Image (cartoon, rainbow over all chains, first blue to last red; front, side, top):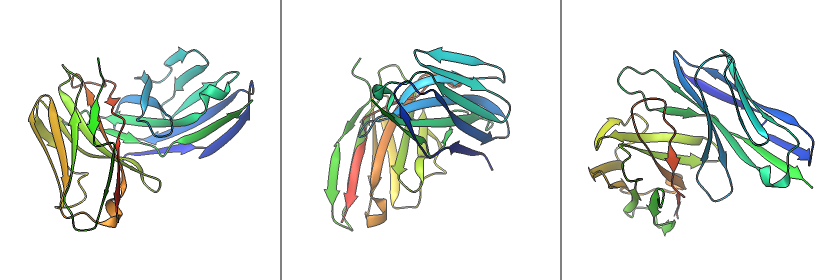
Length: 113
Length: 114
C-alpha cells in the first residue's frame, strides 16, 4: 500500500536555527513528490515538485531534496513567518488515474523570535 | 485570477440534515479534487474529476457522500444524511493536465455536524 510518513510531528526552532523536515514514502512507482505549506485556517499552498532521486529545488530559505525512499525539506536560518504546517505528498502511477496525491500528516513548525 | 472558490466557508448543521458544499475551480483547469482534512487522518482525497468526469471515487467514505461536476466551472459535494463524524474541513483543489501537476487549493469549508 502506498504510504507517506512525515517526521517530526512538531518542531520548535529559534529564529536562525536551521533544521530539516523528513518525508519517507513507499510507493509502487513515483511520478512526483510535492511539498506544500499550510497556514492555520487556509488551504495548502504549493512549494515544490520533485520528480527523480537526486533532484533539488530551492525557494528563499527552503530547499527540498529527494532520494529513492525519502525527501527532506531543509530550512536555513528560519524566521517567524516560516511557522506553518508543512505537508508532503506523493503521486504514483495508477494506470489511468495519475492525478491522485497521497498526503502525509504534516510537520507543524513553530519559529520563535 | 481569483483562485479556487469554495462556499460556504463555515457550515454548522444538525445530524440528519443534508449538506451541500460548492466549488469553482480555476478557469482553464481540467482536474478537480475534493479532500477532507481531520486531525486524526490528515488530508484525504475523496474524489477527483478530469474533464468533468469522475475518475477515482475510492475515497468517498460511503453512500451518504456524492459529488457532481455538471460543467467545467462548478462542482458540488453533498452529504445526506450528515453525521457528527463528518465534521472536518473540506477542501476543493484544481489543476491543469494529467501529469505531476501542482494542485491549487481553495480556502476550505469547515463543517460541524451537531
